[in-house]
Length: 86
Image 1 (cartoon, one colour):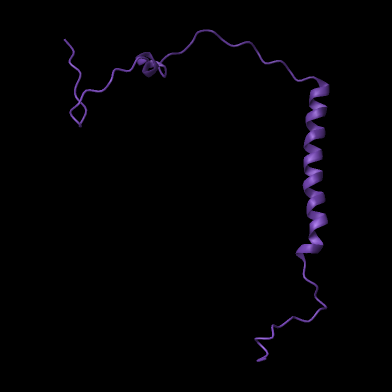
Image 2 (cartoon, rainbow, N blue to C red):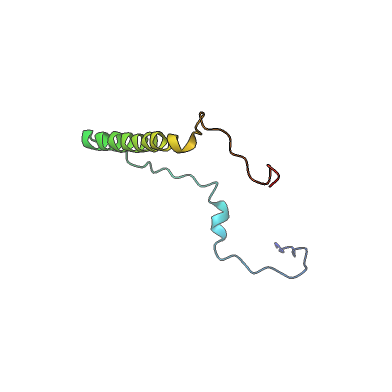
């Protein structure tokens, strides 16, 4: 007869009510799922439009933010009053 071994702590563990889940990795179904339906022209056009909108938004945000990221090259570098000894 099979005797369960005790874990390292010495107290028996509570039995797992769903022991069949351990065998789930070995189980393979012989039922094949139905084939996926092809996307219609409207769905494909909608996906492309959504993608183009997102890309255009990112590019527009970069273009609009470029002046804030650049430093003016004709302005002299500002120095703090502490560096001038005042």
